Amino acid sequence: MAVKPVEYIKDSSTPGFAKAGDEKTITSNNANTIKKDADLGNTKDLDNFQSNFLENRVDYDTLDYSEEEMEKVGEQQIDTEGEDGESLEEKDQKGGAVAASVGASVGAAAAAAVAIITATTGAKSAAAIGKHIPGGMLAAGIVATVGAGVALACSFEGTFDPNLVERKNQTGSAPDNNSIIQQYIDTLSSDTGLMEEDMASYTALSEMQTNAQVETITELGALQAELQVYQSQGNSSKVAELKAQMEEIKKTSEEENKGPQEEMDGLKENIETYTGNNAEATGVKTSGDTVSEFLKQGDQMKNFANAAKIASQVGAAAMLLGVAAAAMRIGKDLAGIFTAMFAGVDGMMGVAANNFGKHADAEGAAASAGEEMAGNLATLQENIDGQAGYTESTSSSYSESDATATETIAENQEAANNANKGGVQGQGQGQKTTTKPEENQPGNQQGNVAA
Image (cartoon, rainbow, N blue to C red):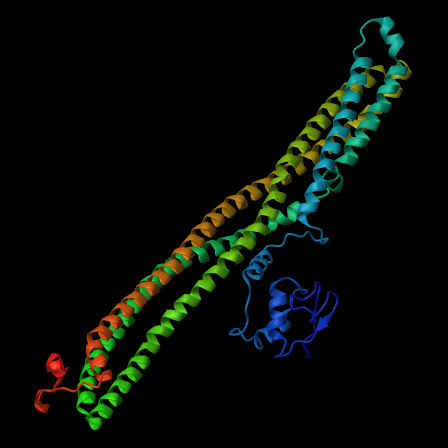
């Protein structure tokens, strides 16, 4: 079965490789490019076959991300788009105004129904009754019917809050997103512990390497002093022997220093890993904040829903008065017939109140999920800041160790050079030793140089 080409939904991060809408077949030559684009969210989600095929061809030794790219990789870990592809930030800007308008409409409709029903059913004098009934009762019925219709229509899920379905989806995804956030918290926390170990290892390696080089400088300095003695005697055979010995010491020193130096270089390279982890976590924080804020908007929506619920309940209660009034007047006059419609609209208001109550619960659950996520994101930010501080101090520690090592080695080299300077100057002036050959041994350096 052939692996499907990768579909691009955004332009590739590599200029000229692919544009949105292009399809690219995975090969060993382009695997790294496609891998990076997939991580950055430039491609359609890979299926299992594409993912496995790609992983087997990626060369991670040459796959490189900038800090900006790592942050973008982090942003892709938490989805900030609704099922319709619209950003959650854009959805929030629209939803609040709609819910507020709905709440106001329901409240106005219910209030109007209450006012008219109260006026028509509360008249006590015969004159008032004759004045308001049956015309007043009919008007009350019409207003109540309209009010109930408005309340019921506004109580439908998509009408009250266009984002409610998505808010429910995000509430359901919150545990998975919190798990992702926790993984990054754990990674950054682990990084700080690893950097403690790295700094201790680097310091020990630097000291070991510095001591080894100082020993080499001392050893070479002693041989150089001996070499100058034989040079002053014109003993070319001994001079050649000492030079060969010195070259062997230098070669051995270089080979022995390779291992520690490679370890130290590796520890320095870890800084890039820690920096990348921090950038990626920052991207997760950015996306997480978007989702958290979207969910927390449910608190305001809950208030609107509860207000509409109460308005509907008040309207329903007022309509019960109308129903009672209608029951008493049926058979007596036309007012009872006109007000009988209260029985139907009362039920509509009751359904609306029930719907708004359910919406309030769902919005409240979303708000709670948003607050919980916000708490986790706050912890993540603390770890981002803490890990960044550790990274900076670790890098500074390496620089300080390097500077100390360089200074120590330079001081010892200078001391060795100064110790042999007299002999070198004497040789350069054509001076010869006046001591006997048997006295020209390494332990008698001062007597081997002509005064």
